[in-house]
Length: 376
Image (cartoon, rainbow, N blue to C red; front, side):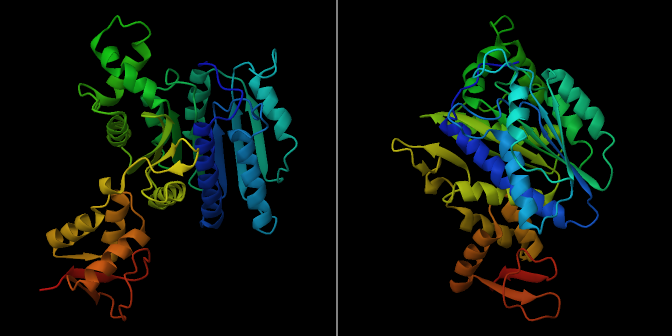
């Protein structure tokens, strides 16, 4: 199906699984408390070995561990969950054994609530994605789906399939791609029809960008252009990415697609948890300690962006400030700091728009309405 996977959990894979783990925990809690939602589907369609040679859990086992923890943390309750684990490859750890059989073997040792159903399959990429598209086409109003797509390359991914999966408006996708390889070969793949092995990437880029080309100035700008184009192509409300440095200057990237503002905000919270400085990515330094991918100066102009936003509109509501922050991939707490600084500098004023005392910015409170405007 793809290239050979590592027998051991490498640093970039740790970051990938950590993000999946954080977000899944948040997702389960949100859906558990969401009125009118009775069932969720979780798909891990390239789920790998289940457990690495070093004993670390892969994505399917982490999924089950988080569901187990969620169950116990919610007074032994859990909504209905249907999980699909799929992988059609042979194990690199146990010769002659299927990867999916290893997943099932290890999964049986993890407690599973009665409301959780697990299905295992070893379909090829096209079959599993086609089957999933058909399944999600019938998703009911009280159902939601979360998709984790972690192929060993990009050849198995067709943007058209992603677009169809997201059409129901009830599905979120986390997609993992080896950006460093794609960046390395994109120019040749789209300019040379006979470039050896370049056809899958050529089809991928041409389908996603049409007659345009991604930004090839650097790998990080390439990631940014993919993120923006995914949003346009998939016709979704929200798209973001989280970059993971593989080697100095070379990156993998997780892409997140959703139509749900709350889900997008929670993914941003997950990113900021992993990168407390800038919420953009994960980098392994020489001493193996996490550091930000980006220097502070690259994103430190958020205060100017907020001020210009208020100035341009003359006055803005707390809801508009929330949306502006999310659009720029900042959380309400970051916007609050900027507003506090602008207020202390006597540049803005705060007034109530609902006849209640305006004692705070209420950025993440849809029960209040306040106005922020420039001070004359």
